[in-house]
Image (cartoon, rainbow, N blue to C red; front, side):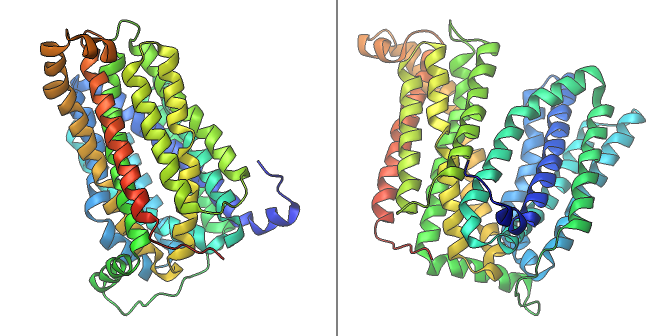
Amino acid sequence: MKHIKNNDLFELKDFLILWSTQSVSQLGSSITAFALTLWLYEKTGSSLSTASLTICSYAPYVLMSIFAGALTDRCSKKKTMLGCDLSAVICTIIVLILFRTNRLAVWHLYVLNVISGLMNTVQQPASEVAMTLIISEKYYQKTSGLRSLSRSLISILNPLIATALYSFIGLNGVIAADIASFIIAFTALLFFIRIPESKGDKRKSVLSLAKEGLVFLKENPLIMTLMLFMSGVNLVASAFDATLPGYVLPNLKGGSVVLGIVTSCSGVAMIIGSVTASALPKPKDRVKIIYLTMLFALGTENFLLAFSREPVLWCFGQIIGWVLVPIMNTNLDVIFRTTIPVELQGRVYACRNTLQFFTIPIGLFLGGFMVDNVCEPFMSKYGHISILKTLFGIGKSSGAALMMFVLGVSGSLICITTGRKLKKYQYREK
């Protein structure tokens, strides 16, 4: 990472405090979510029950984001973030009280996850705008890389810390750690960070403001195309996530331990990519980097896993599939922040949350459905054919290998098609 001068540290003071403390709070929240998943599975023994936790928190994010972003643009970013943080920790405290009194039920977690998801729906666009307001444009690439780094670290540390705490001190200790992380972030935001107010028309209704976000996307096809491109990438990536366990677990050289190792490789790759993204100089063509990095990632990883039979190659596939993601995210983030007027960012980022992420649950469903109901039956019936046996192997994992090949083709076509379309648009950075 490039050396940060004292003057840079002074200019980035608010960002560094906000970024570091919010990262600690996000880690605490992630630990609690993971521990609750463990508790719920122990109680129900149902994978569907645990998956429903994610659905309950994700549904408000997709369905209500457009309106939440419009609301964000009307309100103080700092007050919005403080209010959402406070609401989220209240939900956590309610879980603790119910658990301590032996009254915690499954439906309690579903309801509280919906509320927490709704708070996150409002907070996320407010946080994005706050970052724009406290960061000078010349630091966009460097700070975006740092944010990718913290997300990568959280993805690696979260299951390790959550499992350790849950095993040794139980759910009480996990929630206590989460509350402590909230106190750190809340105190820092309340007393030590100044967030300027963006110019927004508070006289307009939320519906009117939401419409303005959609109008902006209609009038800026580059931004709209990038969002739709990322929705396609998310569709393939989430289908891959659903396919990977069916590929590794039943494999003769696979199993649960190997799946854990292979999965963790993506986090390691993200850390490497995040550090690299912060250190790289300003590129000549950010748009080209976005679709070329995804073409390389979606193509090489899926095809490598489809055709290989060695865990070492699976790990290598995960690394090359994820190492460029932070570089893509960094360039996408810079384009958004420099193109979208700050007074519109809340509602436009919220539109992005709906347009870009609605394909994730669809991809998860399609990946599992295709493996179980299409690819596995196909390989069971025709897997003895020489070319299919050579390409995808034999046994139960061969159907998932075929699905990896389908995802590799689909991801490559999405990147190539979108790349041709993006060439028509001009992006000029100051």
